[in-house]
Length: 169
Image (tube, rainbow, N blue to C red; front, side, top):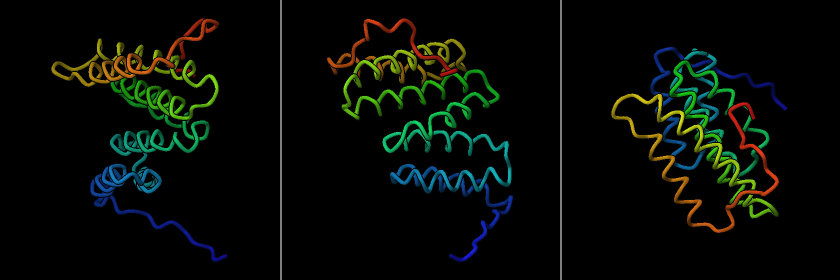
Protein backbone atom coordinates (compact mmCIF):
# COMPACT_ATOMS: atom_id res chain seq x y z
CA UNK A 1 0.00 0.00 0.00
CA UNK A 2 1.17 3.52 -0.72
CA UNK A 3 2.47 5.59 2.14
CA UNK A 4 0.06 8.52 2.45
CA UNK A 5 0.46 11.47 4.79
CA UNK A 6 -2.16 13.77 6.26
CA UNK A 7 -2.15 17.27 4.87
CA UNK A 8 -2.38 20.03 7.48
CA UNK A 9 -5.12 22.62 7.40
CA UNK A 10 -4.24 26.27 7.26
CA UNK A 11 -5.08 28.34 10.33
CA UNK A 12 -7.35 30.46 8.13
CA UNK A 13 -9.39 27.38 7.18
CA UNK A 14 -10.18 26.23 10.70
CA UNK A 15 -13.52 28.02 11.21
CA UNK A 16 -14.81 26.83 7.82
CA UNK A 17 -13.67 23.29 8.55
CA UNK A 18 -15.60 23.23 11.83
CA UNK A 19 -18.72 24.43 9.99
CA UNK A 20 -18.25 21.58 7.50
CA UNK A 21 -17.91 19.12 10.39
CA UNK A 22 -21.24 20.37 11.77
CA UNK A 23 -22.84 19.87 8.35
CA UNK A 24 -21.48 16.33 8.08
CA UNK A 25 -22.99 15.49 11.47
CA UNK A 26 -26.34 16.73 10.16
CA UNK A 27 -25.88 14.51 7.10
CA UNK A 28 -25.38 11.51 9.40
CA UNK A 29 -21.69 11.27 8.49
CA UNK A 30 -20.13 11.32 11.97
CA UNK A 31 -16.93 9.65 10.76
CA UNK A 32 -16.26 12.51 8.35
CA UNK A 33 -17.09 15.07 11.06
CA UNK A 34 -14.71 13.28 13.43
CA UNK A 35 -11.92 13.34 10.85
CA UNK A 36 -12.39 17.05 10.17
CA UNK A 37 -12.31 17.89 13.87
CA UNK A 38 -9.13 15.88 14.33
CA UNK A 39 -7.59 17.85 11.44
CA UNK A 40 -8.58 21.12 13.13
CA UNK A 41 -7.18 20.00 16.48
CA UNK A 42 -3.87 19.11 14.87
CA UNK A 43 -3.52 22.78 13.92
CA UNK A 44 -5.09 24.27 17.08
CA UNK A 45 -5.39 21.77 19.93
CA UNK A 46 -7.41 24.24 22.02
CA UNK A 47 -10.10 25.08 19.47
CA UNK A 48 -13.16 24.58 21.67
CA UNK A 49 -15.79 24.33 18.91
CA UNK A 50 -13.81 21.51 17.29
CA UNK A 51 -13.63 19.68 20.62
CA UNK A 52 -17.40 19.98 21.09
CA UNK A 53 -18.21 18.85 17.54
CA UNK A 54 -15.75 15.95 17.93
CA UNK A 55 -17.42 14.97 21.21
CA UNK A 56 -20.83 15.02 19.51
CA UNK A 57 -19.54 13.08 16.49
CA UNK A 58 -18.12 10.42 18.81
CA UNK A 59 -21.51 10.09 20.51
CA UNK A 60 -23.11 9.74 17.07
CA UNK A 61 -20.87 6.69 16.65
CA UNK A 62 -22.23 5.02 19.81
CA UNK A 63 -24.70 3.11 17.67
CA UNK A 64 -21.72 1.31 16.14
CA UNK A 65 -19.52 0.97 19.21
CA UNK A 66 -19.97 2.56 22.60
CA UNK A 67 -16.79 1.21 24.18
CA UNK A 68 -14.38 2.60 21.62
CA UNK A 69 -15.81 6.14 21.70
CA UNK A 70 -17.22 6.74 25.19
CA UNK A 71 -13.95 7.30 27.08
CA UNK A 72 -12.70 9.87 24.57
CA UNK A 73 -16.05 11.69 24.55
CA UNK A 74 -16.02 11.90 28.36
CA UNK A 75 -12.40 13.08 28.33
CA UNK A 76 -13.31 15.84 25.88
CA UNK A 77 -16.21 16.93 28.12
CA UNK A 78 -13.95 16.98 31.19
CA UNK A 79 -11.38 19.12 29.36
CA UNK A 80 -13.80 21.92 28.51
CA UNK A 81 -12.81 25.08 30.38
CA UNK A 82 -16.30 26.15 31.52
CA UNK A 83 -17.98 24.23 34.37
CA UNK A 84 -21.41 24.59 32.74
CA UNK A 85 -20.10 23.15 29.45
CA UNK A 86 -18.38 20.29 31.31
CA UNK A 87 -21.63 19.27 33.01
CA UNK A 88 -23.87 19.89 29.99
CA UNK A 89 -21.75 18.00 27.45
CA UNK A 90 -21.03 15.17 29.88
CA UNK A 91 -24.79 14.91 30.27
CA UNK A 92 -25.16 14.62 26.51
CA UNK A 93 -22.50 11.88 26.41
CA UNK A 94 -24.35 9.92 29.11
CA UNK A 95 -27.76 10.52 27.51
CA UNK A 96 -26.56 9.28 24.15
CA UNK A 97 -24.97 6.24 25.77
CA UNK A 98 -28.35 5.54 27.39
CA UNK A 99 -30.09 5.80 24.03
CA UNK A 100 -27.53 3.51 22.38
CA UNK A 101 -28.03 0.88 25.08
CA UNK A 102 -31.81 1.20 24.80
CA UNK A 103 -31.75 0.82 21.01
CA UNK A 104 -29.58 -2.29 21.26
CA UNK A 105 -32.48 -4.31 22.73
CA UNK A 106 -29.90 -6.57 24.40
CA UNK A 107 -30.96 -8.43 27.54
CA UNK A 108 -31.01 -5.94 30.43
CA UNK A 109 -30.59 -2.97 28.09
CA UNK A 110 -33.62 -1.18 29.54
CA UNK A 111 -32.19 -1.26 33.04
CA UNK A 112 -28.72 -0.29 31.84
CA UNK A 113 -30.16 2.55 29.77
CA UNK A 114 -32.21 3.72 32.75
CA UNK A 115 -29.03 4.05 34.82
CA UNK A 116 -27.34 6.11 32.11
CA UNK A 117 -30.43 8.32 31.71
CA UNK A 118 -30.40 8.90 35.48
CA UNK A 119 -26.72 9.84 35.28
CA UNK A 120 -27.40 12.19 32.36
CA UNK A 121 -30.22 13.83 34.28
CA UNK A 122 -27.93 14.37 37.29
CA UNK A 123 -25.44 16.11 34.99
CA UNK A 124 -28.18 18.20 33.35
CA UNK A 125 -29.39 19.24 36.82
CA UNK A 126 -25.83 20.34 37.64
CA UNK A 127 -25.63 22.22 34.33
CA UNK A 128 -28.95 23.90 35.06
CA UNK A 129 -27.53 25.26 38.32
CA UNK A 130 -24.46 26.59 36.44
CA UNK A 131 -26.20 27.85 33.31
CA UNK A 132 -25.95 31.33 31.93
CA UNK A 133 -29.09 33.43 32.31
CA UNK A 134 -31.58 32.57 29.58
CA UNK A 135 -29.90 29.30 28.55
CA UNK A 136 -32.47 26.56 29.08
CA UNK A 137 -30.59 23.88 27.12
CA UNK A 138 -30.04 21.70 30.20
CA UNK A 139 -33.75 21.90 31.06
CA UNK A 140 -34.68 20.86 27.53
CA UNK A 141 -32.35 17.85 27.74
CA UNK A 142 -33.67 16.91 31.20
CA UNK A 143 -37.26 17.03 29.91
CA UNK A 144 -36.32 14.90 26.90
CA UNK A 145 -34.89 12.24 29.22
CA UNK A 146 -38.01 12.34 31.42
CA UNK A 147 -40.29 11.92 28.41
CA UNK A 148 -38.28 8.98 27.13
CA UNK A 149 -38.38 7.29 30.53
CA UNK A 150 -42.14 7.86 30.71
CA UNK A 151 -42.76 6.55 27.19
CA UNK A 152 -40.83 3.29 27.51
CA UNK A 153 -41.88 0.85 30.21
CA UNK A 154 -38.72 -1.20 29.77
CA UNK A 155 -36.66 1.74 31.05
CA UNK A 156 -36.66 0.99 34.75
CA UNK A 157 -34.11 0.73 37.52
CA UNK A 158 -32.26 -2.44 38.30
CA UNK A 159 -33.22 -3.28 41.85
CA UNK A 160 -29.61 -4.25 42.56
CA UNK A 161 -28.07 -1.01 41.25
CA UNK A 162 -26.88 1.12 44.15
CA UNK A 163 -25.48 4.24 42.50
CA UNK A 164 -26.01 5.92 39.12
CA UNK A 165 -23.07 6.45 36.82
CA UNK A 166 -21.06 9.65 37.22
CA UNK A 167 -18.80 11.80 35.08
CA UNK A 168 -15.93 9.56 36.15
CA UNK A 169 -17.48 6.41 34.60
